[in-house]
Length: 255
Length: 321
Image (cartoon, rainbow over all chains, first blue to last red; front, side, top):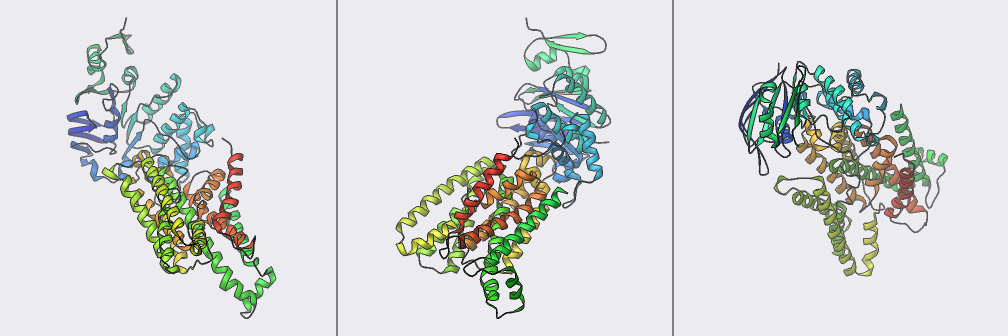
């Protein structure tokens, strides 16, 4: 059981106030979506939760221990993060790029063993890239590169997964198949994803955190928090809802 | 298997160029005579090999290895394929200080110490200027280095203009690299072995940092400590190599890239392989430098470029996109 807690958390980047005095408890089995307009700080919030950005006030606790009291290596064994984008200067194969997800678990001079390779192969299979494992990452399309980084996160296989716009660059089939898989692999664990897709958030997340700008936030169970009024306040455009008993679907009601 | 093959080839190439370096020169020594030299200390071959050719060959191997290793480290650290000690102004700082020492009529020992000091000063300048307010990006560091290098180059030209003709020749040799006065001991050898080992320990970290610093941090690399460790390891290697043999450019750039084109950029292979290839390249270049126009000796820097440019362009042209 993993618990990640924010106490009076204050995050700022440049002149943007991401959140102010935020109190939040997140634990295994919960799947959070972070929604907000461009530039409200979704990425910065994820980076802060991964220990990659210093909060300007308050506390962040992982299992009741301050995040900054963990070494980078210990943290990487507990929290994996899918970053929004990366670019490769030097050639490396898809397999090499996936295997580095095992870095936090390997000793200084240790090489990846059978278990690590097996995990990487399984992850590549789930993102449908196993047949490309020996190709140079730079020869892949944007979507395929994205799937490689997702495979790396699956290979890291940490108890907490932070996903920064996981559906970016993915076609609609891969959005569903990959998020389905993540949902399955991490069902009992904690996932937090930043996204612009309200409907995807509703499909895969049971909790949401809205970043309303100016440090204001709103958090709670997804089906209670998300409704047309709330979305209008979030995105400043009117919304309409379709509910067919199985799915709730929100779309902008612009004429 | 590929790794085994690669290292076999690299080691064979190194031994081959070592034998070549022993046998050719003003007095050629055939291979069987070379074997005599080991048993008979009165033999001319013994003097030639053990007092002249072997020390010089070892110096070439060590300097080449150090420069290539420094290149690998800086390219990974700055995530830029163009980074090398020469480009970053380290060599320029060393050269400026060394030329000042030569101008002042100082001996070889002082010149060497000056080069070492100059390299370190240049490195510190890059580090301090690029690090202002704790904000650090690889581009900022690269730009700082390139601009400083331009400054050093102007200063070097200035010194050359002021120098009397009698000193110009020695200065030019120093600027283009010259191994004829390189004195090495067991310490330089130990230093290279130690630095190679340190780099090898951090090889997997380098793989991550070379891709993305943020991603590396997210996967558990303490990037701040690693950056400083790598930067100073690379700088120390450069400073030692330059103080031994003058400012030899290019090895730090081509040796790692030739290997990247063949085996990719896994630093666990790249680090030791670059040391071997860098040493071999410099030894070959030096052997040619002292023989092709004998008795005239050429600065080794000319030969590293003459060997390296076509070899590198060939590999680049042949490599698949």
